[in-house]
Length: 73
Image 1 (tube, one colour):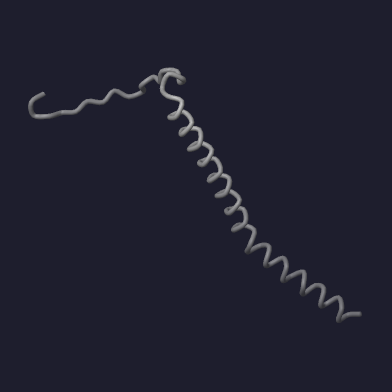
Image 2 (tube, rainbow, N blue to C red):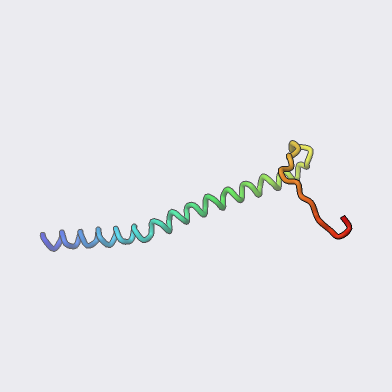
């Protein structure tokens, strides 16, 4: 009976170590897949907007004012 208990405890320790090592990688993989899915969705939406044309979108407000300094300006 003691041998069976030792075997079960050993197996549980090995599984716990495996989960401890694999869990961060699995969480990162799930996060990367979510981000990839969001990027694909945004790219798909952008393609649809380009196909429909600029009249379908409201005018975007320009947030930044940029200038170019050249010798003749």
